Length: 104
Image (cartoon, rainbow, N blue to C red):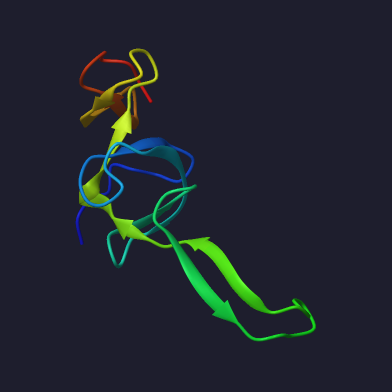
């Protein structure tokens, strides 16, 4: 399993695929599959049967996971896509933006 540089809560930009250029917040990361769910990106239609929770049933739009390699972190300073690095500060390992050298 690879070390993931994207965590839930990060703002990311899609750099490849059908949704290229879209930005959103990471809602959930699936480490074992190397996928992430991004808010408002990669929406799919799911047909649901009527139930107690949803008595109407019908078609529901929801986000589907997309591969981590198609996402790039947004630099908080310059608001552009950036690469992520790791460095040790004191006794903690922290992520930093390679574009602005700012700790994330």
